[in-house]
Image (cartoon, rainbow, N blue to C red):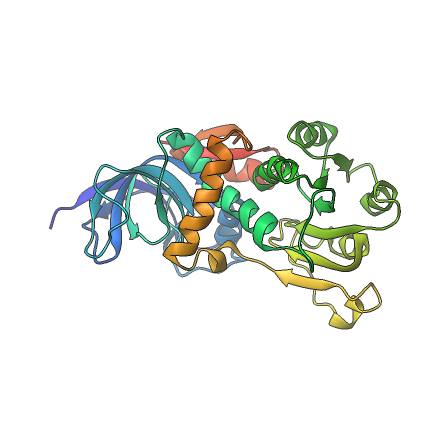
Length: 331
């Protein structure tokens, strides 16, 4: 069995960015259902912060990172959809993408079209697949039709900018919120029909004004605690509250009975990993994303790049809301 070493980022306990340590790890051969992949670029996501801080607890020690792109170096028994030398990209459990080289399950790794660069591949998988399942698979009763209003919080973030563009291609009237005028301008430039600066405007009042008092069919919310109550009040009767993150902190417990008087609302808490639980579903979603990107419907904005060894600063900037679009770690 051949082994080789890789630089990697590891945490030994939950905590702040200072817990992220650069270490050397030994990488062996892939077992059945696994591949070894040499990364060319690694994606940074807010879930990495949740896992580092302990909002999503992990066993220790732990390598972080949920997405990357690179070249397949070795293929384990039973893996038929990938071959040595393939360009590939993934968003996948278990964590561990903050490294140069790793062995991992092959199930969620997809061949990367030649038209898409490694950096774009690393930046777009987790956020792009998230936007895909939200807009295409997390829909209100009766679905979404061209002209329908949807509210998308954090519209200038990585998922948000992809969703703005994809929603425009679907003919949706996406109302995007963001925390500064510059971020609002970015969301508007990427296809948001309307933008609201929630730092200076009451987003509930603005949503009611924009929709003529009717409200939106669905709210896509990764902010959590800070936007929760008003988001429910933005919904039209039978509207869907789709929670997929909690950047401002977890939503406190609430009584489901509230949903009745507000218009018999629907509530769901979504996670990407339920959608990519099988090889087939992952590939179908990735194919939809690849088509959106290669056709030009969706452009992936890489607005920040950090070296692997500067990952602590990358996490600080992400948590301080200093980033827009996608962020990658370069190797």
